[in-house]
Each structure stands twice: as structure tokens, then as C-alpha cells.
Image (cartoon, rainbow, N blue to C red; front, side, top):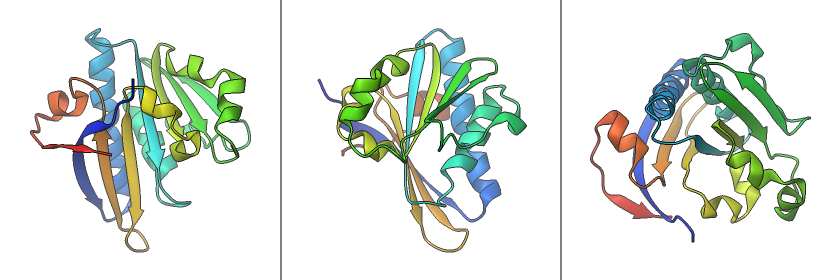
Amino acid sequence: MTYETCIEVPFLSRCPQSTEGIGILLGSCLLETLAQGNRDSLVVGLIGPLGAGKTVLTCALSLALGVDRASVASPTFVLERNYLGKEPVRHCDLYRIEDPRQLVEMGFEEELDKRGVTVIEWAERSGRLLEMYERIEVHFEVLGEEVRRIVLCDFYQPSIIARCFGVETGASSH
């Protein structure tokens, strides 16, 4: 089964602090979902070019989950960093992955089912692997030096974002 229908929530970020705010909102929503026992594990895939704000958003999301801000860094050279806050956070960076089959060989799919939140930078490098999972994708588009269009695409059924934010938007296919 693949998950191809999502609820989209667009944001316009005019500075890194706005991107942090979006991360805090998303992280708070994820924490609430885990705390209520609705789910044991949540997956967030970040998609966008270098310098778009993926690590900024991850740091803020992790902060909302109770992780110390100073401990969050991009795991570019180690593939994964683990943080402990109110819930476990796994921060993965697939930038150096050349073929999605490498992820299968590493047992990456097992990480996605572990308790807590798995945040994946460069999620597009997973090929179609993530389509088999309910997830939230965060798409970054660079519009200017500090201006970003950030779109949250919630593939969870029922929608986590709609429940937390109280939004009603039309579903779209990706």
C-alpha cells in the first residue's frame, strides 16, 4: 500500500525565525499526537535544496519535543543522530545516499517504526520507500535570500495536522 493523498498546509517564511516558528508548531503537534497515544511513531520527511532551512526547522521541531537546542546538529557525516527529550527524536540525513537500495540494506525501515519521531532531511533520496509509510512531508522552496515557501503535506489517515491545527483543506495527490 502506498500513501499518495495528503492534506496541504502552506506557509510563507520571511526569515529563519519564521521557519523556527513553523518547526515549533509542527513539533508541538507531533508531541501532542504521541502523548495522546494515538501513535507510537511518526515520520517527517524534509524535501528541498541545500540551505533552504531543513536543519533550522528540525532544530525547532526537536525543541518542541523537549530536546536541548544545543544538541541538534545536521547528521550529514553520520547519517543519523538521536536525541532524547519528552519523546525520542531520530534526525536522519540522506544527502550522501546515492541509491535508495542502500537504505534497505542498512535496515532503515526499522528506524521508521521505532517509538518517537523520525525526521529525515533529503527525504527525496529515499526513492519511493517513504510512500509506503504514513508521514508528513515538508517541502521547502527558496523564493529569496531568506524567503521560503514551506508546505506541510500530511499523509496520515486521519490527518494529524488537521486535528492539531483545526484546519480544513482539500486533499491533494502527490
